[in-house]
Length: 411
Image (cartoon, rainbow, N blue to C red; front, top):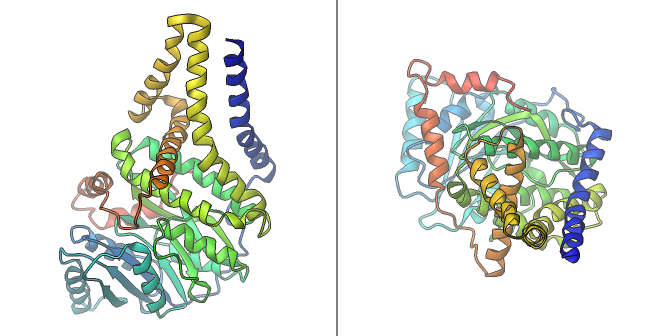
């Protein structure tokens, strides 16, 4: 009995120590804004790279989103990395042709279509190489960008020490408190990492880099966005998060519905950390602080929390008998209320636990040899995205995204 109680206390202390250190470091550094030496006197040409697979029902909204950016459209091109079989490229061509016929400014267009799906990473490698402009902005079809996102991105990249920049999710389509809390915590972590050196996680819906700094990624990559940034950092330039770059993406709170996207992302990040384990201790504070913290959060903590929950539950039953079952029952109740966004001020804790579940599942799946880089559409999140669009008033229509872009969003 005493051994179980002592083991429980040790596990709690060991698990929480790095996070207490993080909070202390955050209080000292107090990161705010971008750590880059931003300049607004650079207006390079930009290639917007957009990977698509069966996006016909939402692609027109994304094209309008890109054309609403506060940036000269004659300096933009759209590079579609497509593997659809639902006519997505034809929808894109028709939309662009109609825009030109209406005598509206229209970006150049490249469509790179694969008859068979190869996975996102090889398609993006080809699209990044084919991009003809100075800066590349990578985004997703089921996301929305703030109107000033390109202005802010190139202002960061004007700093010669910065090779890539990502942003923060300022809103969640679908009104998922779990996803919003997770993104809020992540943005704080990314802010601290960026001010220390560079951040680890990059976001597929919104990141930019200079084309000349691109280093091809592993064709089997499960985290193309973060791997692009990691390789640029390893080549010598910093990769940062600027909260002024804002984007919106869909999200759901239901535990089972979250698993496809969350577990997929977790597999990519875990695999990337392991593949690049030789970077630990190198590249300044990136390898000495940022990567070790991500190792602790993504690879070690999920196991400590799982084992700790079992040990604490066993200790409670050992000490209090059947009454001790209140501990595992409380854990299950916490999870049930968390997925229903009903935990009040404790809701952010559930967002972290939800991430640890995905990270634990990801490690098990990777050990079993799963994950080939070809993903199915995340239907749950796509439905949340479409529901967010359908909820708009018809008279507001295309104005909704612009209004959202002007809002500050959550921290």
